[in-house]
View 1: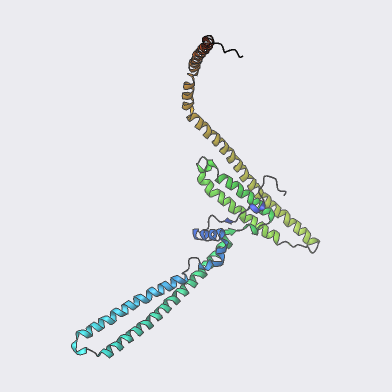
View 2: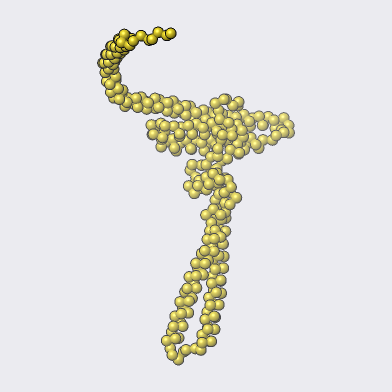
Length: 323
């Protein structure tokens, strides 16, 4: 099928996650989808970290050390209360050293045991997380790379139609059945992707070089059956595109209605402006009268200046004759 100018390209198709998958699986798949590098460190996602194990080991050691010191202090206090049980200074110092050595050995043992327990627990958690991811990938995730070019194009067309509907104003404002769209459209997308993946796998399983006439005949019948299934998928995609076209038209009408509403809300301001401009004729007449008065004054001033010039000529004596 030739690609029409308005069609998306096969590379526009994106991975599809089963909308009915458990939320934990969907979150795990989205994490890997947003950041493919997370797959390399998948076992570490959510597992106890090395620092966490060390921190818990240190806390455990400190707690047990404090408990040991409390017990040792209590026993020592009992002995000191008994005057007959006092020991020499050297023996007392040696006993303290023994207590500290025992405490250090106990702390090291406890820290090692705590770290080992957390390490085993982390490994178990990592294995379960990895198994869950790969199970979710098999059951609830379809990548465009699993499809043929023709199937990727159909998936991209269906996804574009779905995106058009979901991003429309009439959908977001609930002017069409928003709740139904949010359930039905992802379901249709997943079904499309599932059928297209099955079709692609069957096509990829066909022999590239048929070994004889019988194989060619069987292969042609098989391809006819597959083509019928693909035609059914394309009919669904065309229906989705027709729905998206109607939604786009509804959006255009919604935008027209919104602009009419805005213009209607501004009608009072327009009328007020018209009422103000109704005084323009009177203002023009007034300004023209003022201009006429200014012209009369200007003409009178001009005449006065000319008269003053003439008077100055008569009053001044003529210039002396030159020798």
